[in-house]
Image 1 (tube, helix red, strand yellow):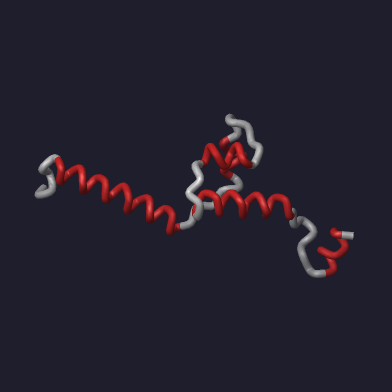
Image 2 (cartoon, rainbow, N blue to C red):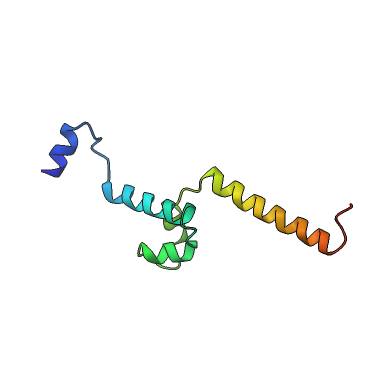
Length: 88
C-alpha cells in the first residue's frame, strides 16, 4: 500500500520517511528554535551517550554558524572595550 504508492509516484525505494522527519525536526529545532543539542537528543529518544547518532540528524545552516560567530565576535569586542584593550 504505502510502499506501492511511493514507488508509483517516483519516490526512491530507499526513502525512509521516519528518518526524513527526524532530520527535519532536529534541524528545525536546532537552527530555528535554538533548542540545545542535549534537549534535542532526549526529544528524539537517543541516549545521552549517543552523540554521534544524534549528530547524523542535525544539519546546521550557514546562517546559524554566522550568527554564532558574530555573537562571539561581539562579546569579544565588548570585553576588549571593558578591559581598555579596544585600541590595540
